[in-house]
Amino acid sequence: MSVKEAVISRIDELCLEKGLAVNKLANLSGITPSTVYSVFDLDRKDVGIVLIKKICDGLEISLKDFFCSEIFDGLDQELI
Image 1 (cartoon, rainbow, N blue to C red):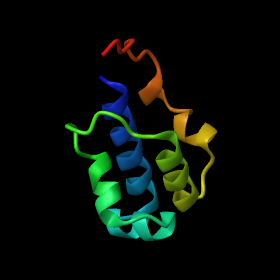
Image 2 (cartoon, helix red, strand yellow; image 1 turned 180 degrees about the vertical axis):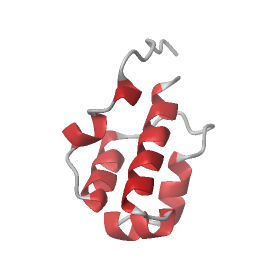
Image 3 (cartoon, helix red, strand yellow; image 1 turned 135 degrees about the horizontal axis):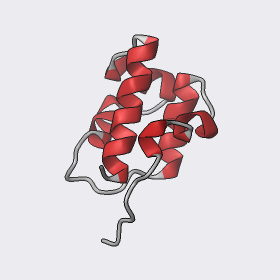
Image 4 (cartoon, rainbow, N blue to C red; image 1 turned 90 degrees about the vertical axis):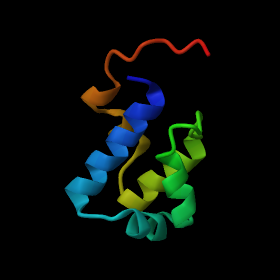
């Protein structure tokens, strides 16, 4: 699994836990729905930490809570 796929999985997991749709997450995070949807686009390689922080703020969790998940354990090194 790539880092990008892990981030997508974690956002999905947290939205499911909180019963949030993408549009609601966007509103809570202060970003546009299209920006949140772009995170789920596998052709877009990078997701910036500032965007992840905004999503965390909308979810009312810390970055530590976001990344403290088995999803991120054992990810392969990405050289490209």
